[in-house]
Image (cartoon, rainbow, N blue to C red; front, side, top):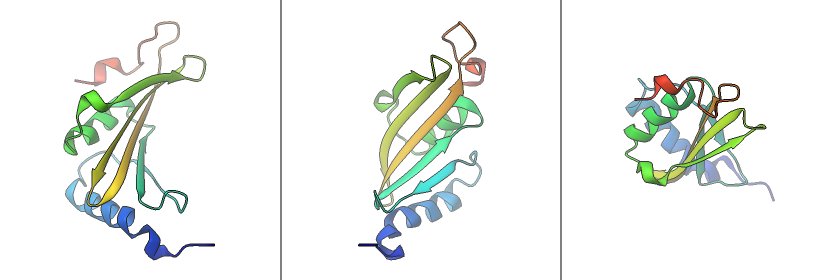
Length: 112
């Protein structure tokens, strides 16, 4: 059975409110799906972890909740955290390149 657009109202409303309240923050890639109709996923591929952190801080998500892992044969660092905003489940995912052979994000100096 196919749902309706109304089934996605929670994450779409959250996205609308985020666009108004946090228009000054870096633009994420946005995903809403009928598979998880209450989830808004914001992912950050440009700007490394700094963009992810700007959003995490703005949304007041506890940094202790952030999960870090490495993928792509040790070439990509990933930060992932879940929260709630305006009645929708929220997932933030940040990606960054890892400097070859160092295990350190290539943009490590950009995160304060």
